Amino acid sequence: MSTVSIVTDHGSEERVEDRRLTTREAAERLGVKPETVYAYVSRGQLSSRRGPGSRGSTFDAKEVDALVRRGRRESSTGGSELSVRTRITFIDKDHYYFRGVDAVELARTYSYEEVAEWLWTGVLRPGIRFTAPPEAAEAARRAVDALPPHSGPTDRLRVAAVAASAADPLRFDLSERAVLATARTLIPTLVTALPLLGTAHHGDGPLAARIWPRLTVQPPDETSLQVLDLALALLIDHDLAASTLAVRVAASARAHPYAAVSAGFGVLEGPLHGAASGLAHRMLAEVLQRGSAAPVVADHLRTGRRVPGLGHRIYPGEDPRAQALFAALEEMEQAAPALAAARDVVATTARHTELYANVDLALAVLTVSSGMPAEAGETMFAVARTAGWIAHTLEEYGERPLRMRPSGQYTGPRPPQPLP
Image 1: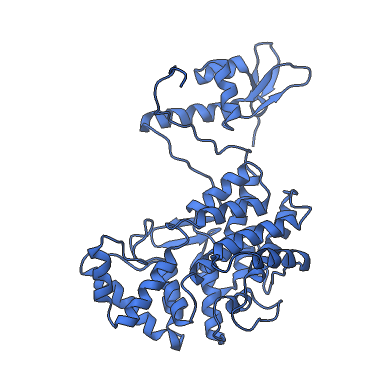
Image 2: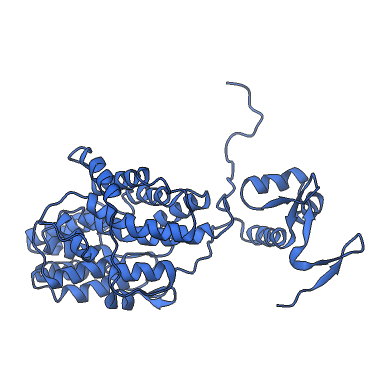
């Protein structure tokens, strides 16, 4: 790239890339008062730097101009919408891609750990396995064991993440190498901390084999483990879902990876995000019990409730994750009744409104047919999505800190008001 030179007011040459503005110049270019420039800095919208021997702050001209352009766009649209640059996941119509590669094909071809590694680094490492350090695993298990019996999966995973964090004195190292090392140990630590329902698998096997006995008492066959591994890989990331945005906000404030992941767990516990698969599980179990989807769907419509597992705000047709899982579930002999029930739900609802199956309905087929509890889908989702959260955390560490600081639109009483 060529470098263009300009002549400054002092008659000296200065490269455009190195052009710095004084506070007064930045304020004039932005059309604001000097004190407002510093308000932009405090909000993370601008970065400042003090030159050697200078008492005043200077500002990057290109950054100031970008803020001017953004202000013009927001004025023309009457508002602003947070937009985040990312190289991780791209969603286009009925497909989604990890680093430009079809995510469904990746999940069908490679294991969860291999897809996670690809998402983090852009490098495929065949046969990679994630291992939990004994100290972190023990700390996480003890913390989770201390929870009340009625605690949900997100409770356990959030507590496990905090305990693993406390066991890691180097957690504040935000270098890429350190964060990747944390990611490769945190995910298996979360799995190890979950209570066992069935017979434990050897600790260095595939993650799907290690999480299966924590989801059901039924012993797995090879096909079941392959379907579970596919589900985990499909769920790794899905662009800026609510929990992922929370993770990026935490990373923008330079929270360490454990804290960023904990922010994701906090949002995931909301009923509109992580709990959706549990609702689909209960509905599917009821359909199987009653022998038909018609009365179950009718009950939902009569009471004004949304039919779980149907529709997605991003995909106009069927969720590609659901398509891939349904195809794999056809190979599971024990999944046939639940698969038929799911198709009955889709067909029955289509008489009222055209909605397609989403990944929550496919997860419900897997959990119902494998003897798993209703919250098992939430557990899968949370463990799988941890890899995506780490990818976004790494990406956000490469951005300007505290940049995610939207301005509030005050709608309260106009000041000054009398002292109460």
